[in-house]
Length: 156
Length: 298
Image 1 (cartoon, rainbow over the protein chains, first blue to last red):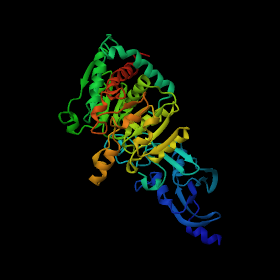
Image 2 (image 1 turned 30 degrees about the horizontal axis):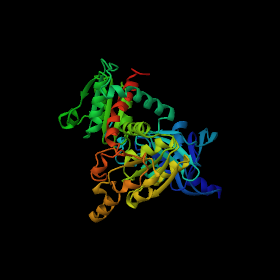
Image 3 (image 1 turned 90 degrees about the vertical axis):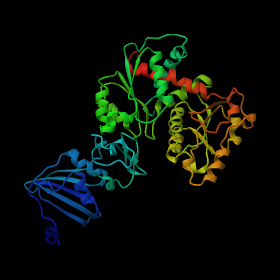
């Protein structure tokens, strides 16, 4: 059984493994980290993998340790994700993502009349709140509009 | 408006009261002597722009006017950020009105001088709220006020920020509107969280005897797809001398103006009518904001 799993996604020598991503959100995790075609590190990911707490996605980024600030953005779309820093095949650091209190240039404001959606030279800015009833809530610092659902659909 | 504490609002209103004789032309002031106030209005506005001009001139300051947008560098495609960076080198303060939500906040990021928000998009018009509060304080009272807001409560930005500000003073708020134009639920919830008593109705007659201030707003025809529906609503939310027979003698009627037909002209000469005085109070209120923002009064 263990061998079969290893075939799905290989262990990495050095880099970052993002585990326990909400199932179906792996591609959005890449987007939120700003990983595009220009990114040179090897990236592998599994979607809908069985885990102890149900299905999950996993992303592995080889040869690159991302900053805490970058990684914490993942909490916007997958608050239970964990970050493993790997050096020489060993997990040297394991953390849960922490919801940032502020994000800039990550999400588009849903208000079409917001100044941040115009051609002005500014990045979107949101304060981030967590409510027990509604989960993660973003409030635009320009127009005060609130995004409480479908945050992943509004990623820049 | 939510950025202001009750103490700060009171301080602005106290300053406005001190400056009121200057606004009336009874006293002279040189508080803004040597100061240049730039008025950047990207949308048409009569009262707001003219009252800022009057406020500046009453305090001995000079006004720099953008003029029409069509004749300015905006038509050449200049963005607001650049316009602000340039104008902030010419003036000591900028008053901005702009059609996009959040434009005043962005302007403040790029400006080297203070920005006063003269209305941005559909969201905020804080100087209107200050003058509404000032009018209520001068003509009635702010603490524990029994107020009715009537008309378009869904889109009317002045009523939204006024409700928030009044919640700092423990008001009892009655919302009078047709079902289509009710106050957005999230605002009602916010107010209730601040322990504000809210009641909602669609009839002025039912509540007119039980309020100290009636704040009327215009119901716009374009909000109704069916013209017949508009006519019905329009006539239901109309202040007439008949309606006022049951009013509390101390009632004051406010309206941000322009009105269309929601207040009948015969009401103008009654002691209830307060809307033209309210328009005047825009001058001392804006004088106070200009003086405080430029730092000539601390």
